[in-house]
Length: 302
Image (cartoon, rainbow, N blue to C red; front, top):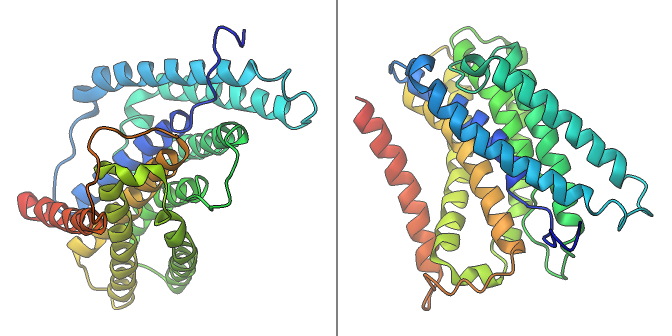
């Protein structure tokens, strides 16, 4: 089979369900808290099912790529069991998503089924990264982590929506828990910044440099909005724009972090859209682009 499918396991494919679910959920949470009316699931179900079918085919293809290497890694005792676990998680996710598409694939709020789906997506993403990174040897340079953005997305999906709903009636334990998560995010993101800024072939891509700027901007926005969100929650004051920023920033941080990590590991020549000197300009453009887009989203919502 390997001669038919000689490619390595894919990097981003196992993470797409997590990116979609958390991205949609946190976006709807921010939209609702800004006073918007979310679209009806009936209006989107057919389109979402069509897109999810494409993603399903991609994940099945990736699973085939993983299984064709079982013999190659027969000396690695954890390879086959993890491949089987990934297949089981994928089957359970399919049954859950297609059994309740309106609730699971297009959620407007966090419930038990959406939480289970996010956890399954997180496990699928983590296992997928194990197989994807196994055949991509790490150089002396430390690339951006592919696991940290997955943790950020999973935490954002499970913690942010309930926090936005409870922010006017928070108790001390909720505030302490949010403070701990925010401190951990600051410390871990500080360690991750040098890995994002390393010199790799992807630095030649304008899109890559813009993503780096967006990722750095979301780190700052997450910290600032998180601190303000905790302060306003503690004094029982409502700031819808701060809350919306607190919902969107970590989500965009996780998604951009995954794309950055993948681009670092794909050894492409990036011949199109080359950066011609002073790549820092595009990083600054990415930072300002993120701030402008976030500001426009608030203005257009009024």
